[in-house]
Amino acid sequence: MCINFYFKQPIQPGQIIIIQPGSLNLLIGRAVDSQPLTIPHCISRRNKSPINQQTQSTIWMRPQSMQSDSKQVMKHGLKTAEEVLSNRVMENGNIRPSTSYRELANHNTTVQAERTDIKCVKEWANTSSKPSFLIGEDAIHVHPSDQYRLSWPIQRGQLNIHEGPGGSLTAVIADLETIWLYVIEHYLDISKADFKVYRVILLIPDIYIHKHVIAMVDMLLDNLGFAGVIVHQESVCAVFGCGVTSACVVDVGDQKTSVCCVEDGISNKHTRITMEYGGGDVTRVFHWLLGRAGVPLRDLNYSSLVDGFVLQDLKETYCHLDLDVYGILDQEIEIKKVSKNAVHYYVKMGDELVLTPLSLLYPDMFGLQGNHLVRVQGRNEGDPSDPHDDHYLIQTQRQNREAGKLSSKKGAEEMKDTDISMNQDDSQFVSSQMDDDSNEAPDNLQTNTDSLQQNDTSKDRRKEMEEDEELEEGPVTQLMGIDEAILYSIEKCSNDDIKRKMYSCVLLVGGGMNYECTQKCLTNRIIPNIPHYQRLQMESMDILSKSKDGDPRIICWKGAAILACLDTTQELWIYQREWKQFNARMLRERAPFVW
Image 1 (cartoon, helix red, strand yellow):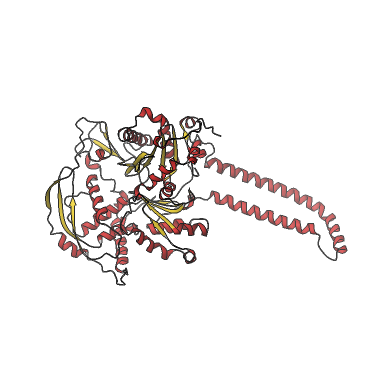
Image 2 (cartoon, helix red, strand yellow):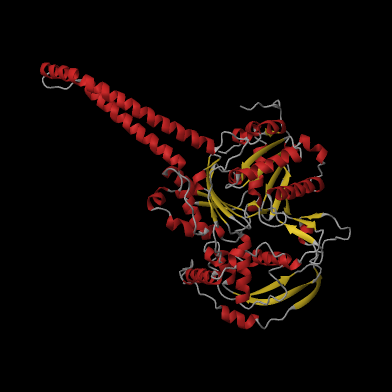
């Protein structure tokens, strides 16, 4: 259908920009860079009229965690995790002893802050010139008294479409365009006038909304003027980045966790599942458990975005998943707030350091209540510029099926009339044949019967296949732990060989579950729940959480950099001139996955 208007010529990796837009961070850089730039994916725009700054809360304060029964659900999830810890048999054969949060609270409530002379290197953003917008760290560190509105264009892995200012699709795409343009010009030192010789590889989540992807590609090609674009899924790029051919990919981000199975560079649609919790929710649980243990949090306000990042740093520093570590530990907590001197607390901590990341296995601890917390890949909602979308295919299949039924019915009636007229002659012929051949039925009679049976079987099979194509994935309403989600995803694979392959290699990426002993903990949780016949045939189970570069947060980006250097990538580019003529149809033609 589409004609490639560009002659095939070698593409320089230095002229390819890889963009991985996340809910919290934007990963961006040239394909030849050793690692990407990581910048907070947000923008603060100056307000023309005064606003109430108290209405702006941290991105981790979620309405779903503030329902009437959220606290009760959190306590139930915590109790379940504590029971698992108390029954844990350590490697030395002893039962793991638990710690009492009341005992910790008796000590921690008496702790006094020790102020130091060390001043935090971070400062409030300079807004004296009243810039129209601020990007990244500057956007986060806008002083509360300044009249700026902070926006996060992507939330829970999707475009942040919402009611209120800046919540329309047009406004969100405009925010993305402003952020990406600013970062490319100021951090990558590429002028917009030179975009016409650069190309972009855009990474999208495994579960995506078609019109959102179309809007982003349109912005890159039409608005920013890049020469070409490739759209690829994060899970497939993660497999490339880790150097394996097939794996069950688990991506734990800041605000969402996605699981899917990738075989030979193809993401299986039926295995995709996304749950709307991540590292940010773990930080909220950490704040709750610290308060329960009496750790003084007078200097931290979780409703403040800046203080939320301080808590996130503390979580990543002290929390772990080594279930053989137990007892009360003395910890020195250092709190650094913007433009203030650091404060030290000498506190005692116990199981809180393990229970915090265990919330990823017991998501009731998040206290999330509401609808649409779990997502699976839905049907393409359609696009006016793509006449061959899913709706068109469904309608034509239904019309063909109805036409086929009418034709079959008409043919059956005609055949019935013909058979009635022929039966008398045939019966006489068959009778004479049976008399001549010692009661043996004619061969052609048996052949016709077999043929009719085969036709009926093929029709039934075709009918089943057509019905299966129209069935959509049923809704999954209950949040699952990561171990349960892995089992759920793998069991959606089509046959036992693929399932065994997925069980043998689980790839853990993203920064939301980057804790010590994560692989060991997940392995011990998954193996006992693998079907017995599958365990007997498995040689080993590998959970990979680090690539050769050692940082699971950039594995997807590194995989896209590898993709940019492959010769086969030449066939995947969507060029600007093609996009203007064919629009969304180009994604169906060139996307390296089923659009």
